[in-house]
Length: 185
Ligand SMILES: [Zn+2]
Image 1 (cartoon, rainbow, N blue to C red):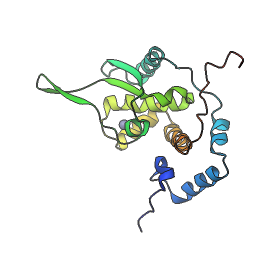
Image 2: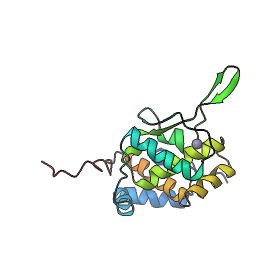
Image 3: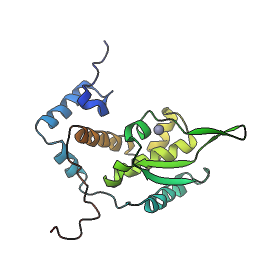
Image 4: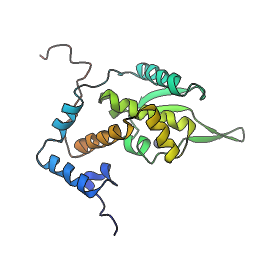
């Protein structure tokens, strides 16, 4: 029997088991999805600028992908859609240059990832680094992701929960991270 499609309110969780979606829906109905995420991830990362992101990505690259080509650019990008571009359906940017197909070695991270827990930024960066070696979202690709970050799938799922929370009109949960050292007026 074909699986029921996820309701549009749960589009970021499409493909997950109906029983799991029902649990998430119950959380949403009682208004506790945000609290659940905050309890699991109390703080945001401190990688706030493109420069800090560049350093962060290069540290992980040096650890796991030393032999891959150098990156030409690393940046947060406000025009990127996080799910389309990093959680399943994006394609590598390629262009023909001098008759040769050349993939652009850039890592762009959706701006929403600036204000999320460290685990999720790491998951997204691991995903992009894995694409330096494997283009498709196949078994080998996800094996490489989980090699770099064993909790990759858990973090991806929790990010999808957060995107669902935002999609349903929930407030950003970590917005003031890194800037909250001054007392509020
Ligand atoms: Zn991808």
